[in-house]
Length: 463
Image 1 (spheres, rainbow, N blue to C red):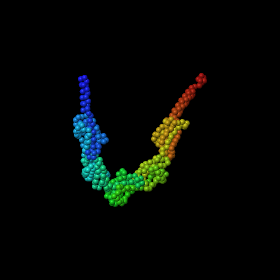
Image 2: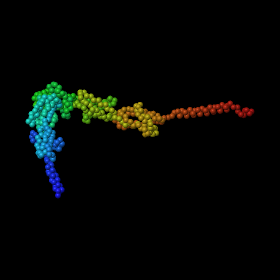
Image 3: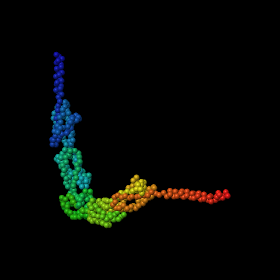
Image 4: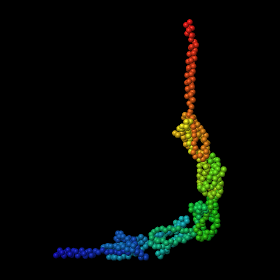
């Protein structure tokens, strides 16, 4: 019985102990100290340990079973850190976060020259504050402002248009702005025919050179409005342009169209022998402009300055093509046309009409090659010329002919017939042998005849 009472007592004690150590929940609400807005993303630390971040409504619930005070810390970007002790039995706490002051740098630049604007007045207002500063030599001005606040920004500078912007100060940073000059006026120069921009055009205002246009045909100027100016523009290969212009307050740019200068051009066609070619067709940029006269010349007037593709064609000649820049008076373009080349076949045969291979061919005294197994040698020769063609081969008599290849000929054949060589030494040798044999026979006969005459008749001896 006693043992049973002891077990029951121990059980009751455990229940009392567990009841005494109950879990607790601390609800943390984080808001902006100035406007009371809930702050999401605030980091929560308890006793130096990271617990988490506040939800979208700015709250965080921390469950604990501590029976002592908690050291609570809240951190959020743009605000001063909050740190304090919270009793263990507390279930709710509202934390007001104080905004941190941050540094805002405003940089101001000239929109045309891209250079810093010094001495510009920068004014910032908002959140009950109003501050102003003047830009330094580098075009910058700095302000210490509270983060998370919208500010109105105004910039003013002499000879520039005023600028107004809205800036949200979140953290330390830099904002940059262009200022447009009040007296800015751009001159734009275009080609009158193509409307393409013209670069390198000199611009004069009231007789004073103010600069040249850029690749886009533009030149920015600083001129007072509500005035009349003498405007003049000049460019190579273009006609000068000049007029008096009134520039009003609302004028932004002045557009000028200039026309190219026109020049007379002559085109003369010659062949390789520097003889004029009559009737040659002349085209400029693919358009036929005419044909050359008996002196090989075509005169063209009023050709605008510029770069052109010029082509000259004539029967029996190769085409002449060249890109020429016309930029002055009295342009004289000389086109030297090469004769067409004909495909020439030199054929060598003997008197029996059999092909002669390995025959050495010379053209105008220069070695051209040897004939193939078919007795042929092929080459390209200029037309409208006379050539001296020679063929030589062992066992054959050499042959040489003068051949004229007519102008405009595409293919041409030169037939050569060679005769076999006669070997005179064989005949001479044979004649010498025959003569020697004949002489020997005569000598023998003469000796025999003399011997017969000197011998006495046999009958007489006997008498």
